[in-house]
Picture 1 (cartoon, rainbow, N blue to C red):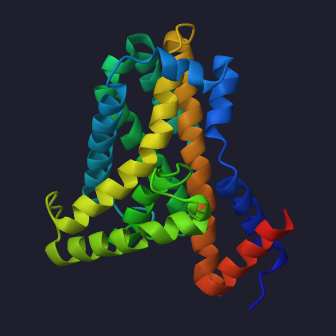
Picture 2 (cartoon, rainbow, N blue to C red; picture 1 turned 90 degrees about the vertical axis):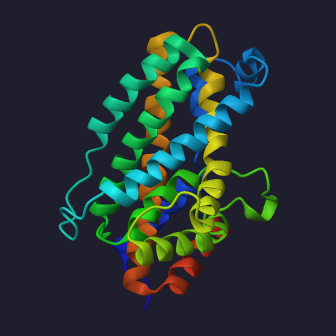
Length: 266
């Protein structure tokens, strides 16, 4: 089957979102200088604080996804409430901007959980059935999109490459949850998923922290940066779940082939 005109337009828009995330550039525009300035201002061992906060945020989000993202509205495909989620995350970002790195351990899990709710809202609007653990884990996987892992090489930076790298971990975690009916954080499948999402999500978190380290940012700037942060993941979610919607209609191989052709034309 060939993609119809509207579906081809949707895939083209998804390709633009997923292959050109641009979070660092948007944050630099707000700060008024390259992010390297913010990185230079961070205290020693800042990366440990970021990694610890990121892992805690992912663990919390995974717990939320598997326990409380219910199936209400599944199949109804209502419009996603992006603006409301941005306001709440922006408010949390104000605290991060005012108190800096010390607030990250509290602010990031809160912001990430709200972002996950927004991602699930978008997933449902694209026809995902959130009664399925696999669909809910796909929401968590969105946090790994648009952030390159330190282990990636040049051939592993695109959307389908990042998705393929995560596929086994998502599948194993979904199978584990389906068999046990609960989240066992020490289970190898869960540990592996958390590690893979954390390694990618932490790239974007580091950019956010670096921006908030710039003295002129403050509380107001922290709110703006957090709004950009959730906007980035809302874009990743929209692109990802548009692709999955089209895959359900046309098949995964057909959609991937057209997606790659769009990249070759650019």
